[in-house]
Amino acid sequence: MISSRTDFTECPVASAPPVSETGPASRPESWAAPVLAAIDVGSNSLHMVVVRINPRIPSFTIISREKATVRLGEFCNQTGALTPAAMERARTALERFCRIAESFQVQDIVAVATSAVREAPNGLEFLKRIERELGLRVELISGQEEARRIYLGVLSAMEFHNRMHAVVD
Image (cartoon, rainbow, N blue to C red; front, side, top):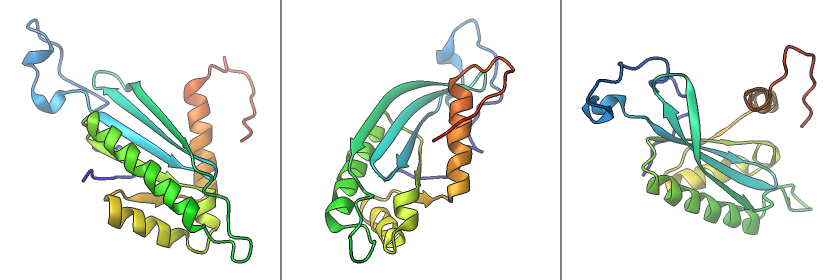
């Protein structure tokens, strides 16, 4: 089972010892570049990115990307609940993501669920099932937190050159 956390507060990204003349092999193991995975459980698709954190400067390198179109937001017309078929598609995709993360020997997985799970009356039940069956803790985030994270993602991926900008999701 892989542990799941919702933040990176324990990750050594701010500082690291200098590289010695003998190279990286002489560094203590605790300073090895951490490998982390982030999973977004969205309404239409699930995304995972696996990154290697650079311990010398606060940066990361993407080493794998995965996507599964599961249409989790195809709610039951009568109840507005997540359908059994959609939940099973998502569970299968998350199980695959966990296997991929393990193959990269990730130290941690940060997983969040957004709109579809947040709005469904059985959304929390679905997240409990995922934790019980896969050992993966998925945090349900608010709409405001979802928007904040989208904005931060855009800021980290684009240059704005000190000009005004608008971000629309």
